[in-house]
Length: 254
Image (spheres, rainbow, N blue to C red):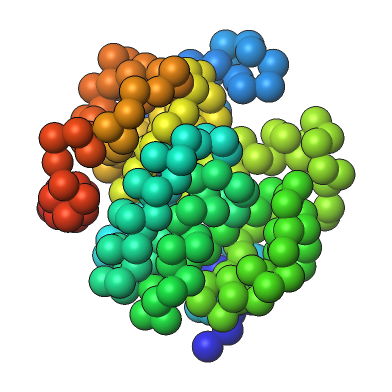
């Protein structure tokens, strides 16, 4: 069944998100804005979900747990493989997987999910759903067609923003609250400090989501995961002392 509009008040995950936010203190914490480097305070609109979203593809599956993936666009080979292994196991179990549709950690998640019809995977876009992956800096018609069959595209935007424009880059940050708001769990992989991924994790915490960081055995120069552990006590799961199956079991623990 295909779907054109997503009423977020009727989706379990997003309804829970906005309900949680309503009970937060309006004095939201600060964050470092990725593009400007300025320290700003989060606003309500930075963490709350729109009332309706556009969707192109399968009807959204909000069966618990919906899992989001976040990380750098240029992961190490080890990180890309780690994401693929974890996403593959979750997809084989029929979990709904969400990410941002861009190369790197996002794409590793989506590609792994394509192998399983019982799994739905959705890319949250910074341009209208009609533009598909073309609305980002990377597109592939073959991949887009699989997306629409095995999941779909979701966006809050009706108008097109030119790639790499100030508006489009701001949308990339704002769409992160939708990635996390439609999920139950956010998995954070390799990322830099004060990056868009760190920003995504902070929004997820404000939304009341479960956030876990996952590391490869190989030490990386990026320290976003360490930043989240130090500032927010986010737990780190490591391939160094856990098997992939044990990591997945831990992710799915109530």
